[in-house]
View 1 (tube, rainbow, N blue to C red):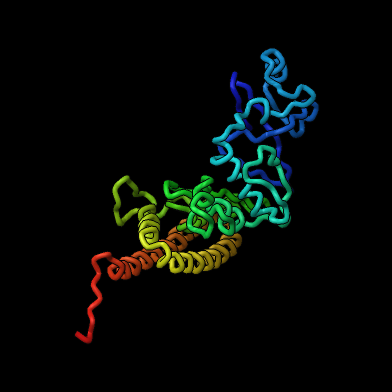
View 2 (view 1 turned 30 degrees about the vertical axis):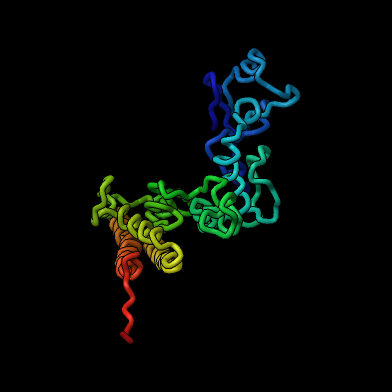
Amino acid sequence: METAGGHQWVAQRIPDDSYAVVSNQLSIQEVDFEDPENFMFKADLKQFVVMHHLNPNPTSFNFRNIFGLNDLSDEYYNTPRVWEGQRILNPEITQSPVSHDLPFIRKASRLIQIEDVQQILSSHYEGTPYNPVGTGSEAEKHRFRPISLPATQESHILQIKPNQPIEVGGIHWLAMGVAAQSVYVPFFAGMSETPEMYHHGAKVYTADSAYWVFKLASVLTDAHYKEFVKELNTTRSKVNVQMRNQLHDFEQRALELSDTTALEELLNQAGNEISATAIQAFQALSANLITKSTDLSPLYYQHNEEL
């Protein structure tokens, strides 16, 4: 669903075999007013557009073109992020990152996995000249706003497995801090308590906050990016494998339970244990990065043993 000026709105159904990547801009294109199965809209939407002469192409009704800005800010702030998501899910299609005609809905070239969504939300244009820490020119590296930014507080993925009870089949994947430098921790929908370290968080760093555990590793890596990014990504990869194994184990155990109290307790246990895997790994990573950072000070002096 998207809203436009004058309290106008339209909603379009995304087919089960398709996807949409949406940034901070209007995305819906052609509206079919004769297709109630796939479109909903304000009753006077068409009349409003005609009355105020808003449609630049009266032979069609492209919601994006009628109400969207399509200005320069879209070309460096919004459209490239849509392009990046579609590039990841449809790498065989060549498109321009500044095109105003990127389709709202596409069919992926493969089945979309959780890892694909995580990659999109963690993206900073890896594998392109636009990667801020890549090999492009300075102009290219800073041309577009990445999806994952240092200012990101948290990133979420909501997964529903239709063949399982919602308590088990509903999974909330939560990455605290910068998605590109964090991990998505899975929590079952049927849990009733969140881990203690997720209760804490403020603008000032505290060691008892899950957010600051992940953010600290990110800040330490940024200070010496070339030296530390490999270790960060190695930790992320290992933790992701461990968490997926834990998730599978708890899922199988949960599906065997019929008692609701026992199920709730097990899913609470899952949240505590899986999040602890990530938190402890990142705490160890930060400790190691702090130790290594002592040798990277600009005041460091290499003693000549021959003197």
